[in-house]
Amino acid sequence: MEEKNTEKYFAANQSYLFGFLVNLTLLVCIALLLYGVFGESMRGIFAQPQPVPEVVQKQNRKQRAVAAVDDFDRVENGIHVPTGLVFAEGFDVVRGTCTACHSAKLVTQNRATRAGWKGMIRWMQKTQGLWNLGKNEPIILDYLAKHYAPTEAVRRPGLDVAAIEWYVLDLAEEAVVQKQK
Ligand code: HEC
Image 1 (tube, rainbow, N blue to C red):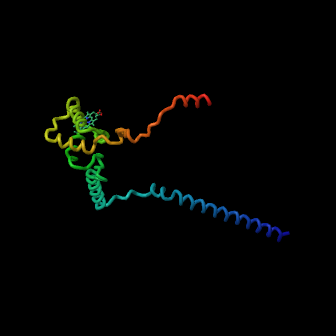
Image 2 (image 1 turned 180 degrees about the vertical axis):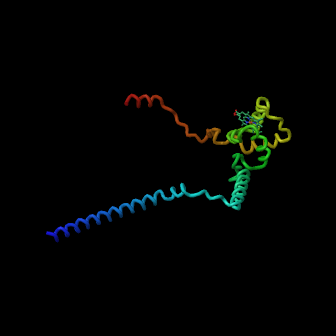
Image 3 (image 1 turned 120 degrees about the vertical axis):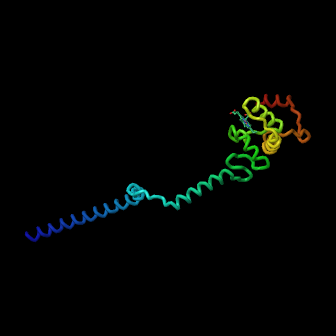
């Protein structure tokens, strides 16, 4: 009687211990998982912000300054990146003059002949307060007429009449076909 009770006691105790170990393992796993997922971001909450060393600060400032200058003058595939203008003879004058009041986009989005550009300049002079361009005007017009001329794709290509295969439209035959339907 006494012995049986002790056995029972140990058996119960063992299963209790087993359950406890399983739970503990599960808890540890969950904790590890949570740490894996959120550990990095939680560390940021408790970490003290590290002061950036003076040397690095100086370096960063220098890099930013260089980057700004770089960007201001960057040319890719013949296009001046900040303005989008074609980088070619007359560019400096055009940038200096034609981006004073509005974005260079107004220029780059337009296409016109030399006379057309001259007309736009006159219009701006008459109505928008554009100053007399003086000796810069021919430089600007040369540049615009060369790089922002009307594109071929905009104009419909002329018809080559000789190459067209003409045919005679037979209305009588057409009528028969219509009737049969
Ligand atoms: C004094 C200021 C000023 C200067 C400098 C200036 N523009 Fe303009 N331009 C204007 C104004 C204002 C408009 C009208 C903007 C709008 O409609 O939003 C305009 C419009 C334009 C347009 C659009 C015209 C249209 O029919 O839609 C073009 C193209 C243009 N400018 C080209 C130039 C070029 C090229 C130069 C350099 C020679 C130049 N602008 C310099 C003031 C100026």
